[in-house]
Image (tube, rainbow, N blue to C red; front, side, top):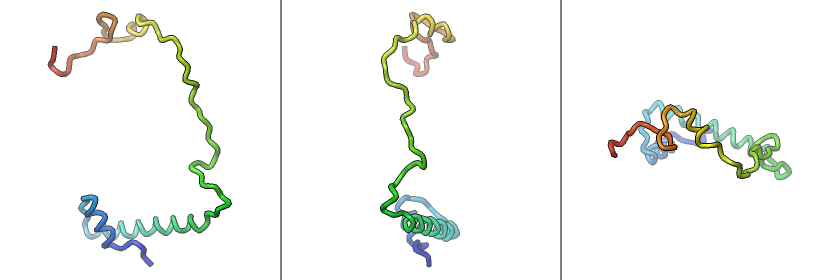
Length: 98
């Protein structure tokens, strides 16, 4: 038995300002119905003894500690730049301003 009707899909599409053809309404109603059934199956299997998880394996922070370190010397950074001027990167002007 379908839980999502063609009319419900049309209403949600209208709210989202999405134009759908008749065949798209029928197809989406069926696809959304499959999704709802799948969620119902998962909900039936889930028990209070099993904690909800977002990942099957435990995750740990993979970021390094945020510790201040000296930056590169300006001369070394600008040596790799295509163009530099007055100790800064020189880039093409794009706004037509001076």
